[in-house]
Structure formats: C-alpha cells, structure tokens
Image 1 (tube, rainbow, N blue to C red):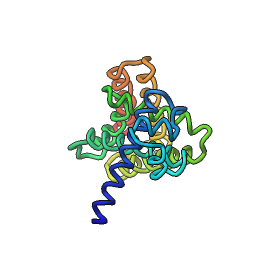
Image 2 (image 1 turned 135 degrees about the vertical axis):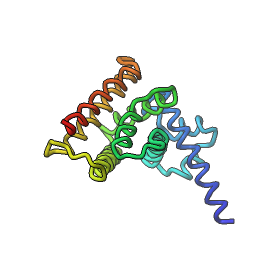
Image 3 (image 1 turned 60 degrees about the vertical axis):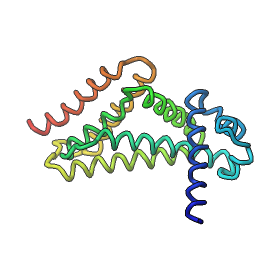
Length: 198
C-alpha cells in the first residue's frame, strides 16, 4: 500500500510541476506563484503547499521537470548512435528546437535562466547541470579515437555548447529557422572533427 501511496504522491507532485512549466511558458517566470500554479493545476493553494512548502521549492521542481523532459528528448535524439562522436553530435543538435513542443520547453528554460540572475539557488542548479553536460561530452571524446589538436578540450567543447545555446536562442526569437541553426551548428561540429583529421 505504501508503494501505491508513494506513486500517487509523485504523480500529483509531477502534475503540479508540469502545470507550473506551462504557466511559465505562457506568462513568464513572474507568474510562478503558489496561487497561480494552483489555478493552472486545478487544485487548491493548500494542495500545492502540501507538496511544495514555498516558492523556491516549487521553482526548483518546475525547473527539474523541464530539464528531465529535455534530457529525455536528447536521449531519444541520440537513439541508436553508436560511435562517441555520433553521440556528441546528436546531443548538440538536440539542443536546437525543431518543433512546437521543443520550442515551449526552450521558452521555459530561457525564463528560468533569466530568473537565475536573481535566484542564487537556481543559478547554482543551472551551473551544476552545465558542468555535468560538459563532463559527459568530455568523457565521450575520451572514449573515442578523437584527440583534439587543442590543448584545451574543455574550451573547445565550451565553444560548441555556447554555439548550440546561442543558435537555440536565435530560433526562439525568430532570428533563425531551425534548419538554418542546425546547419550552422553542424558546420562548427564538422570544423572540429576536420581539425582532428587534418
């Protein structure tokens, strides 16, 4: 019975966090209040506070929710890619939104990144996530036959991540189409591999 109760707890908690993400996507991070999230989730404010005692807990849960969704998208994008360099390419390309669902999630991420300028605990969570992604990409290179000419592997990967993030922002603002952004990103990736092969 306790396992069933636990599952129900996580289901309700997840539904509230998902409602918070929808609210942030539609109205911005300023709408992230217990009362507004309760209305969006169709529950009472007291119910929200039962799972999230304060706005910070709610904010972090919503952020984690969208990050898990993004990670699932990346896993799907990687698919059957076998070689480490193929996985690295798939991970970077998955950062560019190509459909409405990915665009909504990117809007939520952008809102949270803006909120992190004044919320230290969220800024820390974002920095930790970025460091984990960078370490993962470094491990991919280490497990492959790729050896960068540069003595600064971390700097090279940081540059690729910055390129992917910047292009994602351009797609979000309508400054670039997804296809154009993917092409530009692929050029940067190819340039890195070409430098290794030359």
